Every structure is written in structure tokens, then in C-alpha cells.
Image 1: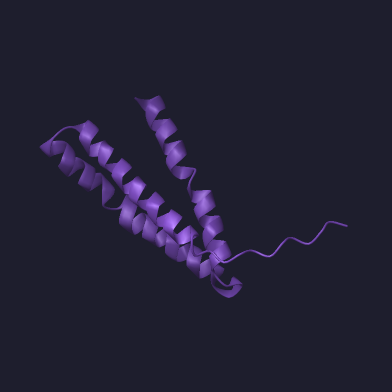
Image 2: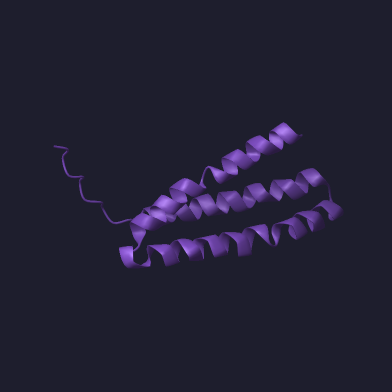
Length: 99
């Protein structure tokens, strides 16, 4: 179980880098630090804080597999929201040529 949990955590956290890059590209340079701070706050407030209790409640009413399976639904919702947001990204200027 532990190797599977380690692989799952790796893939869950693998999305953090591209999310941070998208936030940095989407906001003005003056507010990038604040935008990343708000993102971290929301990730912890909406994910880390309530998730153990929610998984526990679902596991008590059914089983642990169902409780952990609910996390897949929330990850799917997050992916859909990110793809919707990507449609509104403004074009990035071409990088300057290397000399």
C-alpha cells in the first residue's frame, strides 16, 4: 500500500509546478507573490484541511476504497477548471533570440 500511496502523492504534487507557472503567467508582475500565496492558502484551506475528515466520514459509511476514490472526483473537477481557464490565457510574446 505504501508504494502505491507514494506514487499517488507524486502524481498529485506533479500538478503543482504547472499550476504555479500558469498563475505566474496570468497575473501582473507586481502581484505574483500575492497570487501564489492565495493559491497556497486555497490549496491548504480547501484540500488539506477538510479532506481527512471527509475521507473518514465516507469511509465510515462505506469503505476506505470509496473514501479515497472521492479524491479522484475532486481532481477531475480541478482538471476541468484548469482546462477551462487555459482557454482564456492571453498569448505570450515570443522569446528574444539568443545572441
